[in-house]
Image (tube, rainbow, N blue to C red):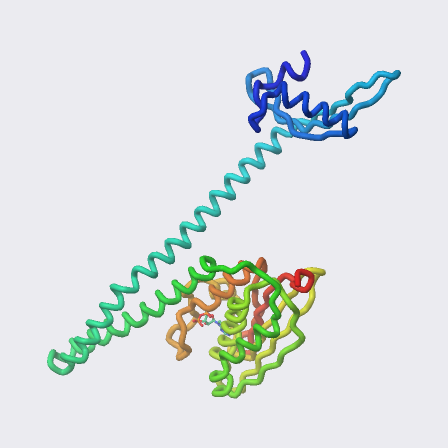
Length: 320
Ligand code: ADP
């Protein structure tokens, strides 16, 4: 049988096999070499995908076609499965983000009403009901306010990937300067000292790079040791031709090793009763931001001495 007799009537791109084959052969003759994918039928009516190379050769004055077929059916099937799985993951991720957004957005209005009416009760009926009632209403108001903060944070979290600008070269030094400006009040009131090394241009998004620095430095101030002045330092080290490792170090209270993973989870705090304000979303945001930039984030810490957060970012100078 000739190769044409074991081809299906049509190729996957819709062309009639007989016409396509003549075209491909003509191309091989005109260019001297042609490589393409082709579909055959196997004996059981199934398909075999092959990678074909055609090369005209002259033997004893006669032009013939030298052809090799490599069976790539398994590879193509694996690629197809991989594509389907990827598509499924992307859809499932998008669904989850949409869910977080809608849930947090739609919960805002009823919650606002609960807080508002609980506050009204508090103002109008304080000392007019019994003492227990005043305490209970106080709990409702406080919990409502706490939930409002959680929901706002959840919204902010879902925004990081929903409203993402395309990544571009950003000066890390400028982003850090902006973060320090935003933290000015905290820096002054804590009397902190900040040391900054040379910082490169990286592939990122301005707003979120500022937010990353601000969260990490803000934590360095929030979780400072009570007996010493906070010292924060930021530096970057090149680790390969296209990537940098940043470090943001503090001399604060430190974090026990068993919590190093847990603190990146949403709403996880080590000591919620402590005076430090927060809901436990800061580091979750940091991790999401770094992942979006294509990097990783991790930490080293010695309880009682301080913590250093590391994150990797791609070099942006070539792209600039
Ligand atoms: P939040 O600060 O709102 O609690 P984060 O997600 O930023 O939320 O941090 C989670 C927890 O990790 C904090 O509650 C704190 O216990 C711990 N933590 C974060 N950064 C530091 C730090 N630099 N030093 C000590 N503990 C920290």
